[in-house]
Length: 267
Image: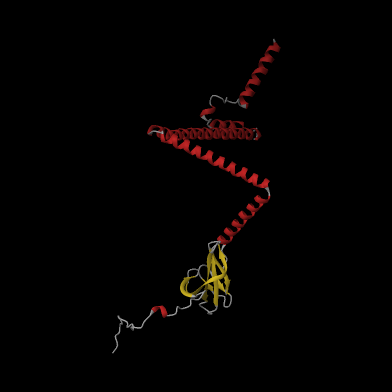
């Protein structure tokens, strides 16, 4: 029986390694490697969606007709897990991404499209600045203005940090006490406003009561007077309001004056 694990090999005495011909290497050799799907894609034949980071056994080859700054680009071939149709995509070193070539369609990605649109916008602005010197001057003025604003903000922050570094515990307590006094002032003002509003409401109520008493019937003067007397006057109107003369007192005064005048005429 032969050995299961051959450790030594026999080399004949006429063995010459220089006479052995070298094997020819393929220019575009294909390797089988394990790869993950770089983005979400939809198969063109069956319509199944292949999610990102799904693993495949792929074939890798070099892209012969394209390079980026002297760097090689790689193409990968995978198969759809549902219909086994071939899907091909390649590396995109310019954008740091992968580009779909055949067999499937890339799903919508808002972030990627926004990044590409922003990059195209910057390239257009650069071309405009090269062709139009006035636009270039305006952009430089805007940039200088922004730099000045940034420097001013930095200086303000430095000044604040210096002021805060020189503060003591007593200063911090004073800063805390200031808003408390402000709150007390606000509370006092609100109380005053409430008192004034109450006074105004009372005045309006008294006026309405007086108007209603005037419109009432004259047959019951005593009842109205008694009702008025029963109503308590607020404490803050005691020095202002005066008692109103009743109709009976007015009639008595008028009768007295008439008697005096008649007596004087008789004399």
